[in-house]
Image (cartoon, rainbow, N blue to C red; front, side, top):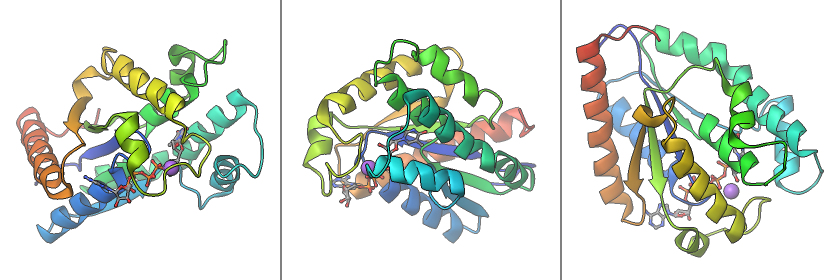
Length: 214
Ligand code: T5A
Ligand code: NA
């Protein structure tokens, strides 16, 4: 994958849908092909803001719904310039969760003053993904996988609302063209092959249309 800029690819999906597993495999595959690849994940729990988020997710502290929403967004803004710099220098950036997570998990709380539209605002202006791979798995199947149930949002009713909201976001004109739905209920190897194909197609499309920054 050559060109004037790198691609921005994000992974999305419910908790335990296999994002981290597939993210790592994609990063490795592309690096083996000689591509420069930067691997990131949100929340980035290593920054001061990320530490507050971590303490919230593990249940150590409480935060008002709007406050934690804005902190999740702030945690992406902390890295916005770095993401842009990588892309500009021709490095592909692959991210485990991004703005879509930020919007759907907050909206799933059903707070009266936090609908999807409100949740989107602080995300406006962040580097826009070229491709969003949505690993689609039912909340029932996700719940069967290892480790489910330890963090704040790992409850089946909330996960079911999150899945519906992802679908709603996929209909939004701003996001629609970026999202590719991947059936995540298959083997790790099958998913890996499928995802690589989608990324290659998307990369060729970028080459055709010119890799200007948008
Ligand atoms: N959040 C996040 C917000 O509310 N707002 C935001 O802005 C952001 C960015 C933490 C939480 O924060 C919320 C969303 C989350 O609730 P996180 O740290 O990314 O986000 O936590 P998770 O998404 O839950 O990360 P997980 O590691 O739990 O899930 P993954 O990455 O989807 O799944 P993975 O790859 O770790 O796999 C989970 C298990 O399944 C197995 C793996 O071996 C592992 O045991 N597995 C498979 N099993 C069968 N078939 C396959 N194909 C499999 N692939 C993996
Ligand atoms: Na989790």
